[in-house]
Image (cartoon, rainbow, N blue to C red; front, side, top):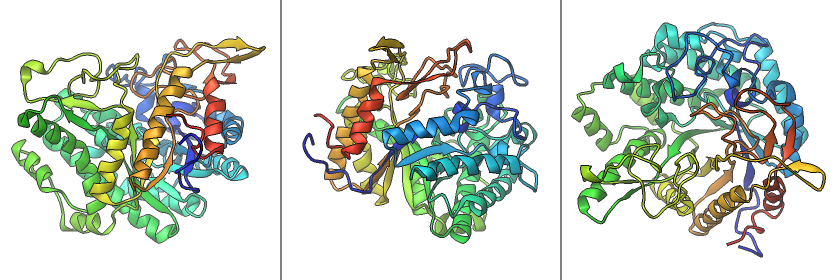
Length: 473
C-alpha cells in the first residue's frame, strides 16, 4: 500500500466529534440543559444536582463560537466529511415541547454552511449522549415509552430543516453502550445499581423503535438521505482454545452484535430472546413495534472501534485490571494505552470482515483513535505536538482497513475520533487528547483555547491527499 491505494475513489476521509464535547455555550442560544451538564466527571462519579463550575463541557473547546475557524482547519487537512452531533436540547430545550427552538436550528445551519463552503459532507449524529435533562428527570429517560414520540418529533424537525443538505445520518451514538452507562447513553436517571433488568432492556427496545421511526421519517422527508445505526464494536477473543472459552467469548460478543442484528434484520435474534428469558425480562412490545423494526431497517452500519477484549469461562482467570476497561479480561498478547485500552489494529480488520459477512451492509468507521497526554513544544518557532505515537496508531489501523477493503468489505469512510482535542466522554478530561489539532485548555479549565496543528495534522493531510497511498506497512 506504499505506492498505490486500494481505498475507493469516493472514500469519505474525515473526523468525528460530539456537540457536548466541543460546543460549550451550554446555556446560550436558547439551549436547555442536557445530562452532560450534570456529569462533570463523565461516568466516573454520580451526577450532580445541577450544572457546576468544574464541568469542562460548559465551555468545552468553544466550537459554538469558533466553528468557522475549526472547519477551515479540517478543510486544510482535506476532510471529505465531518461527523458532528446536533444537541437535542438546542432544538427542544426540554425535549417534550411541540415547537423547536429556532436559534438552535440556525446555529446548525451555519455549521453546515461552513461545511458546504469547503465541499465537506456533514455526517450528523442525532443523539450523542446528550438527552435533554428534563426528559431524564421527568420521564426517567428511555425507560419511558413517551420518549419515542419526543424523539420522532425531533427527528422530523431535523429532516425537514436539514434533510436536503445532509446525506448521512446516525440515529443513536453507540446505542449498545446503554448496557454500561445507562445515564450517559440512555438518559436514565435511576442509578445503575438500582435499575432493573426489565427497565434497562425496555429502554433499549424504546430506542430501537425510535431509531426505526427516524428511518421512516427520513424516507418521507429526506428521500435522498441515508440513515445508519451506530454501535460500539468490540471483538471478543477466547482467552484459550478451550471450547468453554470460545462459547464465553461468543456470548459476550453477541451482547453487542444484537444491536446491529436488530437494526439490519429488523427482528430480535433467538439468542437475544433467550438472554432476556434467562434474566427474567419480559418486554412490552407491540405488533406495531415489530412491523416498524422490520420495515425500516438501516442503510448502513457505522461503528466505533478502540479495542478488543478477551473472555474466559474460568472465573479464576477473570482478573480485573489494565486492558479491560470495558469488561472481559486482559489479552496477554496486547499492549494498552495510558487509559488501559488495549491496542489491536488487526481487530479492526476482524470487525470489518465480521460485520460485512454478517450484515452485507456498507460499513462506516466513525470513531477510532488514541487518547494520550500530548505535550505542546516549539519547533522552528511554531508550537506543535510531536505525536508520532498517534501517527503509528492510526497508520497501523488504516493499514488494516485497507486489508479489509482488499478482502471485499465495502467501507464507506473513516472519521477518527476527536479530530480536534475535546472533552473526554468517559472521564470528562481534556488531557486525554485525540486530535490532530491541539486546543490550549487544561483539566483545571485554564488555557487560551488557541489551536495548534500537531505533527499528525500534516500526516493525515497526506493520507487524505494520497487516498491512503502514503500509509506505511
